[in-house]
Image (cartoon, rainbow, N blue to C red):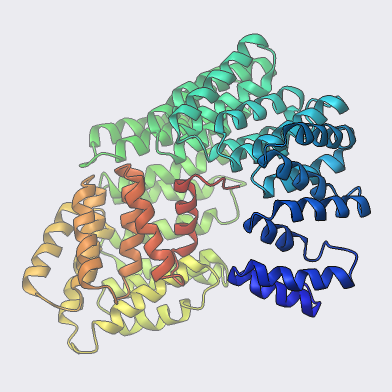
Amino acid sequence: MAQDPNAQLGDEYFQKGDYEKALIYYDKFLKQNKDPRPIYDHYYNSLISLRDYPRAEKSLKSFRKDYPLEWAYTIDLFLIYRDQGKKKDAEKLKEDLFKDVLPNQLFTETSARHMIERKEYDLSEELFLGSRKAIGEPTMYSQNLIALYQFSGQKLKMIDEGISLLLYAPGYLKYVENQFQSYLEDESVSAHLESRIISRIQKDPESLVFSKLLVWFYVQKKDFRSAIVQAKSIDKRLDLQGKELMDLGEIIFENRAYEEAIELYGYVAKVYSASGIYPEAKRREITAREELAKSVFPVDTIQIRLVLKEYESYVNRIGKKRGSAEAYRRMALLNAFQMGDYDLAIRQLEEALLVPRTPRNFPGQCKLDMGDIYLLREEPWESKILYAQVEKSYKDQPLGHEGKFRLAKVYYFSGEFDLAKANLDILKRATTRQIANDAMDLSLLIQDNSALDTSYAALTEFARIDLLYFSQDYMRAKEGFEEFLARYSKHSLTDETYYKLALIQQKMGNYDGAIDYLDMIIAEYAHDILMDDALYLKGRLLEEELDRRDDAMDTYKLILFDYPGSFYAEDARRRYRQLRGDAIN
């Protein structure tokens, strides 16, 4: 807002919509100040709102005379001529404007910006394209035009401009991908983009930028098999030795498209069997098979045995090398949690610890796994020793905090709630947000459900069933929690029980059933600690498992507005923006 008293009063009346009074003070300002720029926009809009075209025309002619390089005055005078039907005057003014502006990039951008402010999108497009032709730079104003087309809703033109930019400047690939990402949910845009990319590849098969763009497009559409076909072609042509294929495999694996991940990693392992990439590719292939076998309920133990045999063949082939350490560890966890062979699992973790040159945290992770297995073997004292060792060895580090948290959970499972809470209260100040959040949740669960029950009867029973959930014995845990609800009707642990049952339904693949339990928490326990947990899990189930995108967005929005301080707020915001179509870097 201008600082001159007359300008300030004019602005106040302008904001109220009293344009006649606004003009009185703007005229006083102009009598005392030759430069109209501080008040120009409001002054012009006041005249146009009152349809006082003669006065506006007279003022603009005067302003143009005093400030010939202030292109806004010429543009606005052109608009007045055009809107009044003065076709000849308008065309002459436009011709003069373009003649002066087109050869100069700065003048063009300044003029186009003013046109866009006036919502004259076609005029600004004409200006950009005319200047590009006059200067002779085919990619000049590409980013301006892409932004213009996005702003004005001309999606197909935006796609065409992005394709043209890549044709001359392949280095803009990431930029173009980010601009396109928001529009792929529109099927007409998506089909147009795919058609344009394929057309460019057909015209110039050696142009890699469009092949890479097509891989990206298929990944965004989750058409991973088509992405793999294109990525294989790029790998061969550039002799990339499987590196980019491995990167693509990681994306596919994270999207839980395990069959496609198996196909891709298997291809890399076969084609590059004699290279250094083989051990990692083969291990990832087996891991994808493992996750596929575990993704069904109940877990198919026959498939688990086949996966275990593949891991065994793998470690026998590559020996005690870095890649085999994780394979030993994964075998141990499968044998413990899926097959119930705890002794073999511990021996395999001991084998993993003998592998040289493993990552720094790997030994500590193996000790945590051993602690878990001793807990399954009903030897919690051994678990406590191992967790405490990790806490000490990795003091003030995330892995050390994890060791302390698991130690607290052993106390919790064993009914030693005071010791559990003492450890958890320390962890609430941990630098790792996930550990701090989990510690706070478990600490509050103990605190809130022991204050009125000094015998800990209900909490002890709840913890015993929770241990079944930890052991991945989901059927027995489900039955236990259902019996708990019947025995302790309306107990303060009811919402925690609903939440555990929701998690079990998720593990069993009954996503609607899981949401039913979460909705009970949302409806009945809106002010309790698990409310944001329930909303976040519901949002993820709606998004990832049921493909109910709009419902997922509504759920994430509740977290953002009603629980902005939630641990989940940041990820809920990211997911909401992705579902809305924003480009996320």
